Amino acid sequence: MIGQFINFVIRPPRADYNPDQYLWEKDFTLAGRAYKRQDLELTNARGHTLRCSHYLPSPFPEDTPLPCVIYCHGNSGCRADANEAAVILLPSNITVFALDFSGSGLSDGDYVSLGWHERDDLKVVVSYLRSNKQISCIGLWGRSMGAVTSLLYGAEDPSIAGMVLDSAFANLFDLMMELVDVYKIRLPKFTVKMAVQYMRWVIQKKAKFDIMDLNCLKVAPKTFIPALFGHASEDKFIQPCHADLIFNSYAGDKNMIKFDGDHNSSRPQFYYDSVSIFFFNVLHPPQTSASSNKLERYYDLGDLKVSAGMDESLLYEIITGLRSACTDAASSSVRPSIPTTKSVSELLSEVAPLANIVDSMASENAGLCSDEPSNLQGKPNGQSECCSYTSSNRESWGRCSSLGSSDEESPAECRTVDNSHEMTLKASATPLGSIQQKSPVPTKEEKKKKKKKKALTVPKKLKGEKFEKLEAFSKRLRHCILRRVNHHRHRSS
Image (tube, rainbow, N blue to C red; front, side, top):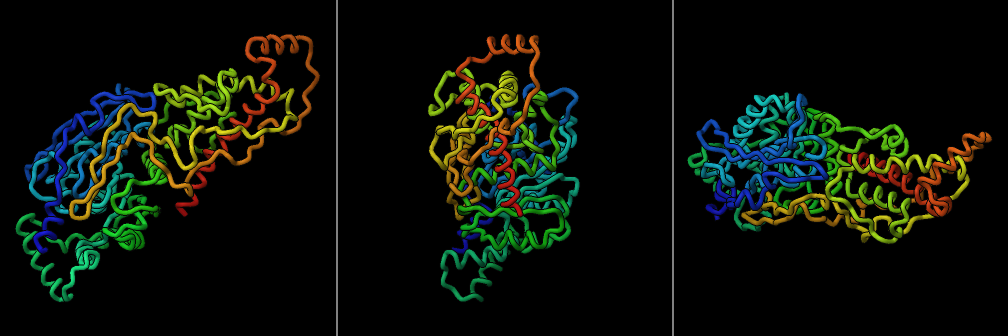
């Protein structure tokens, strides 16, 4: 039993994988944009070679440095765990760096240290990125052992822009004592403490670190980096009280998100959305080409821009449905096809004439009422196509696991989201043109221009029901996005 606990700490199951099979391709497309995976090797202070991958836009924008988030995996994980981080962050112009810590994955080293030596590995990566003129500021995203690693390093480097800390433990000694109860090891407390002291001596001899030094409560009060904490409410391996203790003693700007699931379960979509918004706010990535003024008037998203981590599949469906309603190509009850090679910004540019159509009709049909379009999303309640626009399907290795247990998931597969966090389109929407306004009497020239415009772009049948659908679609787009933002703010408060 003692040997099993020692292996749990310093030699958990090691991920042995083929990078070409389990990582993103060397060249891939995500949300209509091209990216590349740049593999490299770094050497840490102990002489171990670290296998790393950097996900970048292809081609890289000239004279525009981009921020980078370093993903830190768990004790039995590897850099393949960063696949989902790439899906979430790359569309926001944030590059992603992933590595196998020493003793993990394909990197050198025989043992892991649950954050102690991994902190030095992270220092090597940060130094490398800081020497790269293409990288601006740096953020950290750690899970379990990776979250502890980020905390330990962040206490030494206040220049880190922000950290996401998922399932960190407060201190290793308390965690080991708790696991004795979880696994129902029926021994007297003094016997367990003697066993832990023996384990401490063996681990110090083999892995060259003291388990008593792994205490995040010592570094949290002197760390001022903005941090987003996350923890599963049913986590039996690292209990939620660990996150509460660190959060309460943390000195910097902080926020906490609790969600359903256990230590190794996949995280819900609203958590990933919160992570995306957090990094967007602290890293300030450069913006892509914005839509026109008319589009911004009709697709007014408040202070949330297209690249701020919103659910792009939802935008695809609403915008595609708007276009199909105008062209009468398909019924509203049929699920619109979602293009896989165009970004949301491009789609918005394509539907720019629709805004003009609605504008020209609003003056004539200002008094029309809105009907509820049926089945806008065209999919069952509770499901969200969070990654349906990706070009690859890759499995992600198990997270930090309890004595080797892990679960596999595919970052590019559609995830089922809990109904309590689901965004629905069934909320009532008031058309933008429902405000009664009297337009001035048009002149003869204006009438001729209007007739010519209608002959080119607007079929006569569009005045009634389809006009109502156009306005309802545009209003719902704003309503749903702002509802998602308010939902995150409510969850964060």
